[in-house]
Length: 373
Image (cartoon, rainbow, N blue to C red):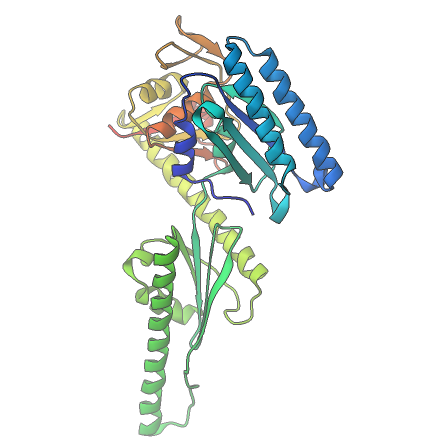
């Protein structure tokens, strides 16, 4: 199962800055279309480890002790990749970060394939993780007049946690005062059932610390179900799903949830882009284009960094860590300034958003930032 890529986890990796040595970042593609057999995966592991060993041996500027530490890191990564079934539970790729002087050995299982890659740097190479997208913990609440089901997980990995069936009588149409009283009794039972469902959902939220909620119910019950949820859950509602509450399979619920999650992501991108365009247009809290965004990052003003999915650019980094455009007279040239820009944003607790579903960043230079001040 792919592990959640959270802002906290990225920040912990991005803030590893060893005083001596380098951080080894290894990315291994496990796409079953290419590496579906143990033999194919073993060959891929051997290839990427060989690449890592060569990079350590050929790296400039390392002391004898630093090179020895990195060789040990290569062996530790080899043991991790060969010592477990890295492709278990649908993992499509894996990233391994190692730095002996910082006591770092972290494995991140990814839900989408990546290119095989080895990086040696002063920091962990986190750009491929950001490109995967942030993971949020989701809850799905399904309910009809008598039954309810709850699911929780990281989007693609939902599990059913609760199934509720309450004693709610059926409606009938005999008419008269007895019918009216009976109907009131039934509606009270439905009300109590939805309250019960909301209580179980809030308990699940407290246990799991979930970020977003999807709800599903017959149209005539949808508003009432929402009204019964705790305010913490109501403010986290990100959409609705349409499935058979009692009979839908887990796969059907996951598929419906994925559609709703994808729509939520598109909506979040749209809102962030609209905010950026408005801020840039007013000359306010917005920066567009490489030079202006790097300047804002250097001043720790960035609240949200927006990057077009395919955007890459050369740049420079000076001895104090300032990020500079390629035409700057100072600093050492780097082939892709996007990685250090992402790292600096994460270190400053800014949100890094890769824009996949809209092309608004293209006329803005491929990169933009909503600013704190």
